Image (cartoon, rainbow, N blue to C red; front, side, top):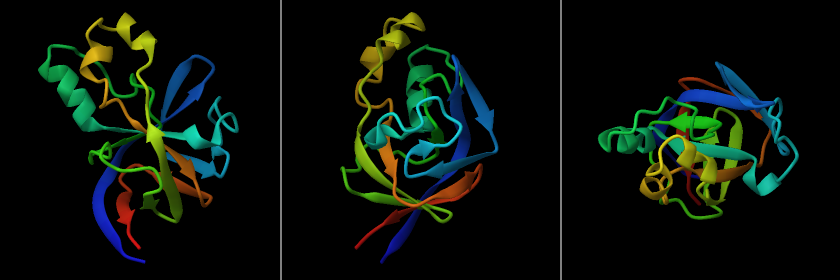
Length: 146
């Protein structure tokens, strides 16, 4: 199997009650992010991956938001939004399979009414976990090929 390095993990988050927790590592299994409140809720939407480019796009349009506000679990320095369902990423020993694009959450309009429109196709992408593992800030991300 071929692998191509495409980026790095910038930040990691999980949701606990109504707050986003920034952490140096995340443990995941086939049901999702183990400490996350959405764990084992919707396997196809287990992990939300967002690119720093989404934050840069917001900032370029005068919208100041901090990392984590888009609801991501993984913030990366690679734009994954062109990836198709079924494509896979390797991070450490963990394999993620892209499942679908993220739909825009209406709650983001509370931050700024233009945010859902601006990031309509650039908020994030969902993946499911295929192999258990732990990922860390700074880990390399590889796109797996056949």
